[in-house]
Image (cartoon, each protein chain N blue to C red):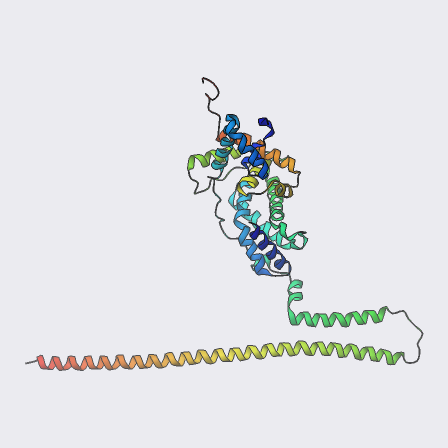
Amino acid sequence: MIFREVEDRDLVAKARRGSVDAYNLLVSRWERRVFNYILRLVGHREDALDVCQEVFLKAYQNLAKLDDESRFAPWLYRIAHNESFSLLRRNRPDGGEFQEPAPRSSGPHLLPVETSLAVTAALDRLSSEQREAVVLKIYQGFKFEEMAEILGCPVSTVKSRVYTALDLLKETLAPVPRNAGGGR
Amino acid sequence: MSCASFDLKAYALGEVTTQERRAVEQHLPNCVACTEEVERLGVVQSAMLTLRDEEIPRRIAFVSDKVFEPRWYQRLWQSGPVAGFASAAMLAGAILVHGFQQPAVAPVAGTSVLEAQIQARVETEISKRLDAVVAKAAQQEKTFAARLASTEARMQATIDGDRAAYAQGLEVVHKRLTNIVKSSQIAYSGDRP
């Protein structure tokens, strides 16, 4: 993991010196993960792909503004976060504050099907902020500090969102048996 | 320690220090409620991980693709000979601007000589840089022509070789066919009564 971070940093440094190949390598390294992160936020494959393209373009154009080359991933996800929420705001029907979760796409290769459907439904019940926190933590594997950097909020807020989301997911995906604690 | 002092969610998510992890692991065998909580968190995470990442429908356009193509001024700036010419022009421009911005002074003896010297230096500098750019371009052209000639010669040799081999093969086939025809004729004339 540390090795990988060092490699990213080197690639960023090279890309900043004008190496197109270095940036292409960064794109191919991160495109799938960033695409899935965006997909879980916006819920639509074509939209996710467009946003993903925009993210990498913006990252390339603003690479000189990245203060710390070793922080490429959180910085890239920060751009992805901003672009995704910008799209969600543009797409909301009433122009009000975005609250409703986006419609989910069902993946073509989800096994076992029942569990995946249950997870999809459970994620749908979360607010967009809670869902994003869970996606960053469980699917993308970021630490709380990195998430705070990506989301632009304090670590305490990040933890609160993740913990609340976990409590809600637990109720759906790992409910307490009805007879638990009673009749024993 | 009471159950409330353990952050079981942080433990399940791997966000605890080694010391905190050890403390939780020492506590769990003695507490059914906390064990169940950790198990439920594990179930949630396992269930979530059944939702696999999707393949990206098509790859993201790379920097070398159209979408990332540099603008005209970036291309101009990045091209070697043109940049050399541009820098020479900029230098000449800067010297001229500097010359015009100088406060007007009363004409003194030797001013025209000084101007002529500056002009001569500017011209020398421009011509030196232009010569360098032109020489570089000529060298590139020469190299390209040499490579083109060598590639053409190689291609011609390959074509000649192929042509000879084809003619040879054709001749062999022709001879074989002639032999077959001849032997057929002999056999046919021998069969006749």
